[in-house]
Amino acid sequence: MTLRSLALATLLLVGAAAPARADVILYTPAAEAGSGGAVTCSAVNIGKKTIGPLVVAILAPAGAEIVRATCSSRGTGGFCFQSLSGPAIASCAITYKGSKKAVRGALQVRDANGNTVLSLEAR
Image 1 (cartoon, rainbow, N blue to C red):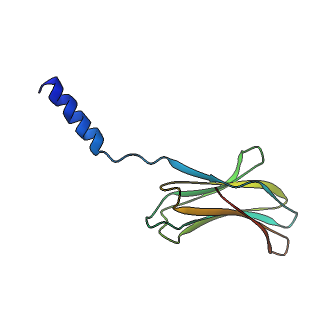
Image 2 (image 1 turned 60 degrees about the vertical axis):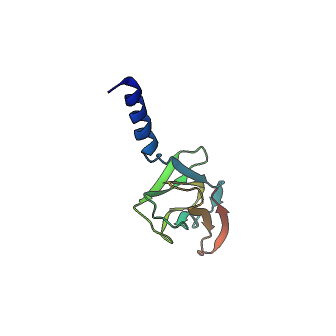
Image 3 (image 1 turned 90 degrees about the horizontal axis):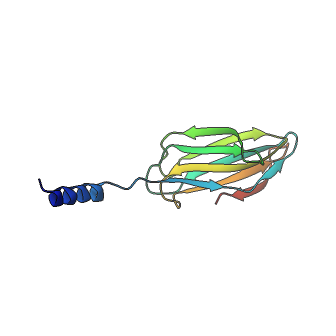
């Protein structure tokens, strides 16, 4: 095989390979839950394709992960969530592979009576 043929064959193989999808990471701003309250990080697949894993993490103000949930494959309408009891100041990070439009998420803050008092969209 000539060098030119080898180069052409390599280009064809590289071009035929499916591109790897990078992780999509969505974040929320931080919010505070008082004593007896809680924060919940949640995500739902609104896309047409199954995605997975879907990871939701609750982060401390400095960005360190406090707690996470890793959910296996999720089809359309499938969701994943993780909660943390207050008092806490936290934000939410949602990680997955796929289209940025495929997942919607939010950080919800609930008071001591379980009422949602704040919901922040993940972007």
